[in-house]
Amino acid sequence: MAEKIIFYILGAIIAIFSIMAVTSKQIIRSATYLLFVLIATAGLYLLLGYNYLFAVQIAVYAGGVMVLFIFAISFTNRPGEKVHGEVPVRKLIAGTTAAAGVVFCGYIIYRNIRKVTVLVQQYNLSPQKLGETLMGTEKYQYLLPFELISILLLACIVGAVMIARKR
Amino acid sequence: MGDILTNFFTGTVPIEAYLGLSLIMFFCGVYGFLTRKNMLMILISVELMLNAADINFAVFNRYLYPGQLEGFYFSLFTIAIAACETAVAIAIIINIYRNLKSVEVDNLNQMKE
Image (cartoon, rainbow over all chains, first blue to last red; front, side, top):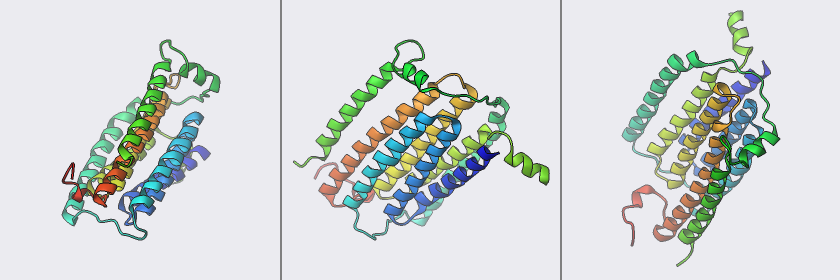
């Protein structure tokens, strides 16, 4: 009961603010709406029982990525400046594409997914299991991708500094 | 009517509700990607799409394979990769702004001045 009501509230927040994020005229508002969407997504992870994913979503997305966005916006935009959109014809084409995609995928989900749904049993993901899975090299353990991510982060830092430095 | 309301609010959340939600988020991202001219707005749209994909991974894992963690870790690593991608993209955008004094895609018709 409570779970469903929370889901509907989060779903309404996500739907409304995603639409507002892509239609808002001012870019800083758009970034703020994106922040709301990301936080509501973190709430969905909490609802699913993935507490660690919730923490990562808040820290990395709602924290780090949003700071980068706001920094870049304040660096490149003059305050109060309006965003130029596409011409109405292209907006119509884009809207039709998006609506057609929603209808098509929604039909597929409606027809197929509900046939394979199984009942969810209560399931607790302990931090101990999480740590063992992340730090092991056996089957279904993920040390290698974890280390690859660290190399990717290093390459990304070096690349970003190389691209953005003054010549 | 009362039965419908009761069914609406009791029980667990069905999987297709989560999928429909991420569907809406994804196609909002597609719409923004196609209509926006500012590169930062395009990046915001891409973030929306990535976020929708993350939700799907977590939801499929939770509902269909509750004992395993593949989708969970895929979401986790996708979040890390999205952070990298955003950092590099913003570095590129700042570099473009420095060279062209604008971040509109219309002005981007040359690779090098």
